Length: 381
Ligand code: GDP
Ligand code: MN
Image (cartoon, rainbow, N blue to C red; front, top):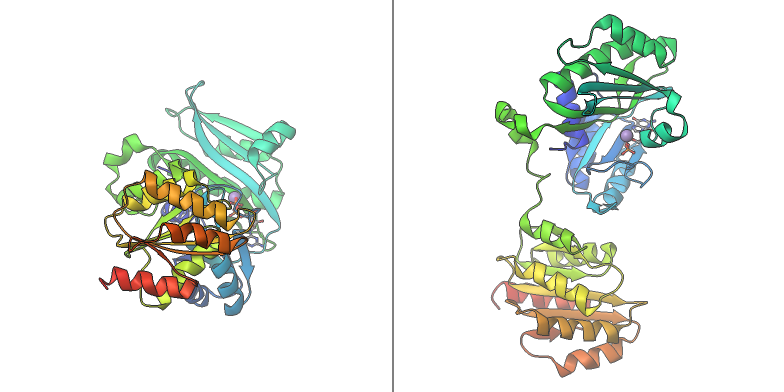
């Protein structure tokens, strides 16, 4: 089981590894509240189980509530390499003088533990390994012997860090080793492990993979499950290449583009309805894609109506309309459709839909009207 960064940091903290104070937030308002509690400046961090969040725009510094609101708003719902951001971690920002890399993992071929430490942290370690392999100091540890402090000290010396960091790094590595072994992890990684201008060393990121075969010895791991486990609909959607997030309501939503999908959810909320999901089918809206989207939503027993909101750009509305009609022939739908279609060739698109209109396929001229109709149907009207 892979942990989110905030969970990894909780795990680290249990073994005494220093991390920054912070808290999780699932909404913009929660993010602001956490920031106020932690104290500015803060870092707003996307919680997704994929690396390179910084480069993808999922990590931002904020000096005040307005900046937190802005960054939290743009990062929540963001798609980072196929992972939708549902949760943020807000922590006190650190001043960074140096960024290092540290990890323990299993070397299965050698049947030993492998520690890696590098003065070149904060970047992709695979890249360092490829371009400058000597920049990584390695240490094999025999599980039977454990990690002795002297061996650890030699290892840190080989990594040629800033000498001011050595003591703090030795201390953290000894704890990280315990976290790895006693914590039954397959991988513990800190990237970056930082040295601050005032000479302190601490973990700014956390990647922890727990060994599932040890789960029965760790009832406390149950708390880590949940968000990480996708529901059935989400895994089905992901297997079909759709961006889907399951929600609790009864209005199924299909839109093209993450922005439009978000505003569709908002509009449904505004008129008193509850979205059953967020589903972004991406740029196009071919019969295949719409079919997949309808199939996924069809598996949700709570859905009473499906609101399709498409803005035709490169994919013209007439093509989209044909795709939707074709999809409705392929999928035995349980719920009626409300369709709002606008953009390039909207008139032609509407004409195609109109030929197939019924009380199971309703065309609405605007997003607001579509939302109202959908919510009325969901409410049984
Ligand atoms: P990743 O990109 O997914 O590995 O996310 P990280 O948590 O490692 O953050 C990426 C980068 O953001 C770090 O290497 C830092 O350069 C920067 N960063 C993260 N937290 C802070 C912070 O508290 N202060 C400053 N100045 N930069 C930060
Ligand atoms: Mn990182």
